[in-house]
Length: 320
Length: 320
Image 1 (cartoon, rainbow over the protein chains, first blue to last red):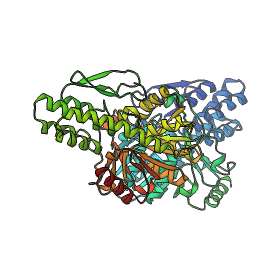
Image 2: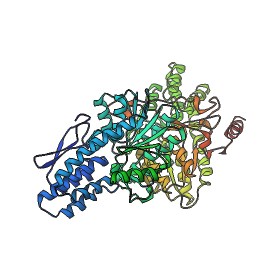
Image 3: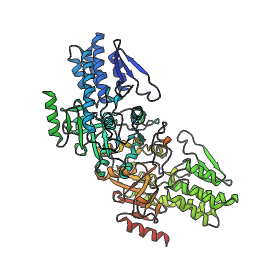
Image 4: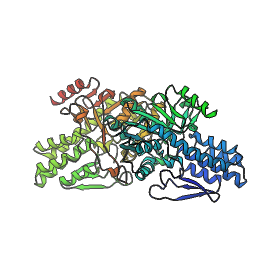
């Protein structure tokens, strides 16, 4: 897997997925021949990252169509595998209505690669030489199947000599930062240090963070952002310290049918992900209010406040 | 170990320490016969918690005196085992100047038990029936050798029917919350849920936290508080959501020779505690500015802003 290679690919009539639960220790590929297997891989995080799971689900619909089973039921199963990501139901719906779902999935993959590149370039323009950026979770090629969203912005900034170092939140409970983002940055040769999620505040207070950039699982029509749990505290701390707080996400992450963050369902995952003892509460996401977001980088432009207007504008553009 | 029992005791001319690194899986006791062994246990966190390491170090000085070696060198070794906790050098200095260091250590232990009880009772008065409190790290009997500081406040509030549930930050990287606080609360029958540290912000935004109470490793003369990394983000989030943010600590935690938090040395621990891959940064503490602290519970009273004055008053009282 290079920075531009995908953690998922279509081969011999099946969807191959790099098992991200085993990274960085092992690079093992899973072969999905049914939509049920794809839904399982999405639910158990073998494939994760909002854009990548949308893609995987589109391929899942293609498998359902090829298999000749109940395509509607398979689509329902895929949609329900992760409740927070809006790309998931968006991609399933579009694949379902396509005459050729496999062709649709492959075109979507190409479109997403291009979108990643474009939003990454737009985001990198906000960076300056010597910047120390902080990020949360994993938003690079592993998360999108392309160049990455927030991770793509970091890579584009690095390529333009506008980045000195990345602070990587380890991202509990599943350590996507320590396992996946560290792995990606290491392979790209970008200097980084992993920190406990709760160390980010102290880093900001000590003047060691210039910018924060994160991805998104769903963006409401008013600009509220649902993303990996721990994003909201970063945004609150960034505001206190006058640090720019960016979100990088394709337009498909914006859900015009979700008026504000209050309407975004927050997936609660198994307590055992947090503690072996079981007595835990494990919300997978939190909501960052639009007022704390400096800018949203999309492939169709950089959105800024007032978000209701800039979002309506970009959606009209995409729809037209 | 019951809630009132100590994780350290003097027996047969040696200091016995409950190895907290092995909890909750195992209850194993370590026998220290030299100050070097005690310093090692402090450095490697077999014993931890500011009040408990102060106690352990005082017993360490007693071992040095009994052993007939270089007591000053042993004291220096003990003082340097953890740089942030001020109780440590305070207890070492007092034990060193005592005619009978063992008698001093035993009296100190008794004094700290009484102080814990008193500050816990004062803190519990601020709680109300039905409260859901959030805490960070471990500040119960394991941390103090007594009733606990923040953990003691929670227990006293529970005994007075002023507490419904505790949210326990797991407290990365060493999981003192998930391992030790959960173990203590479970034994005390207090309802709790462990959460990832970064989930606390979302809990507050959803109205699920009424109060936050934490301990302290050092309090500066102006009321700035050094405590386990992750404390500062909680205080910032609490301020945003209008949630009371309390610190519970004995007066010995206050260092009149540290004017502000900026002068508190922040211990950096081994990166391998955060990540096996090694490329990590691991500050063990952060500093919460006094302006974010609603009140400090001590055995000599509840301190409130302006802290420079309330702290000067309580130190004069103690000194006199």
